[in-house]
Image 1 (cartoon, rainbow, N blue to C red):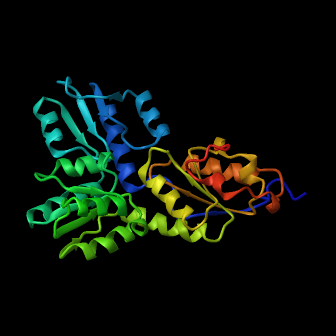
Image 2 (image 1 turned 90 degrees about the vertical axis):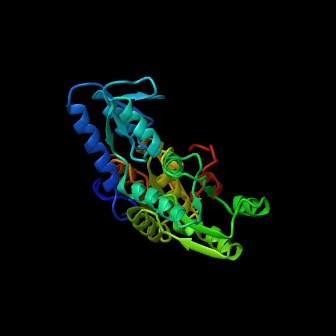
Image 3 (image 1 turned 60 degrees about the vertical axis):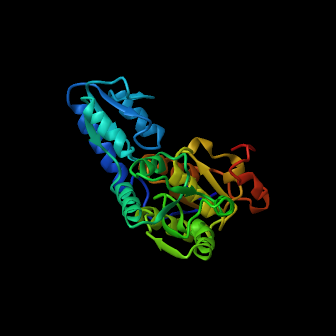
Length: 311
C-alpha cells in the first residue's frame, strides 16, 4: 500500500478553473450593492451556481420572480443580462439599477444590433429559452431567428422563415465545435452570410483545454451547476471525445462506480463554479482509498446525461 499522501490514480486539471472575469465582476457588483443601505432585489440567479446565490441571499439579496411591483430600492441585473427595454422600465420606476451583465454578453447584444441595422436577418445559434438569448432578443426591434440544431434550421428553411441575407451570432457559452454543422449547412442555404463570433474567449479556452485532457484520461469530471449553460456545453463537448464524462455539482456525487476503475482522471469546471468546489472534487479523487480496477469499468451509457444509474 503506498503512503496515504500519494494518490492511487493520476489527476489532471484542465487549464483554468473557478470564476471567469464576468462572474467575478457580477459578484463584486452584488457585494458592493449589499454593503449599502436599502433593499437589493434580483430576478433570477446572478450566476448559475447555488453556492454563490445562497451566499448572496444570506447577506440580504432578495430573489424575486417579478420586479413589476417594486418602486424603491436597488435591483441587480444578472450576469446573463436583461432586455434593454426592461432595464429602462426599472430605472423609470424609480429603482436604482446595478447592471452586472457580462461585458461579453453586452458585446453579443451590440453585434445583434449591428447586423440588424445593416439589413441582415439576425440568426442566433443558441437556446431560445436561455436568459442571455432573451436579453439579446429584447435589444432588437425585429424578431431574430433562434435555432439550436440542424433540424430547427431545416424547419426554418422549409417554412420560409429563413431569408437569403443573414447575420449569424452565437450564444456566448456555446461550443463552437458543436455549432459547426449548423453553420456549414446555413452557408449553403443563404446567398449572403455574415458571421460574428460572439462566443466568449474564456469559454473557448476552457473548452479547448478540457477536450485536450478528456482525450487522454479514463474518466473526465466536469464540475458545475446543472442550470449552467456553459457547464452543460462543456460536458457535452468532452463527452463527444470521451464517453466517460461525468457532470457533477459537488464531490458528493462521485460514487464507487466512478472512482473504482479509472486510472487517470481529468477535471474541468464551468465559469461560475467556485474554486473550492473544484478543489473538493480533486481531494475526493485523490483520497479514494482503493486501487483502480480497470476491468470494473462501467458501460459508458451510465455517463449519458439522461442516465439515472447512480448519477
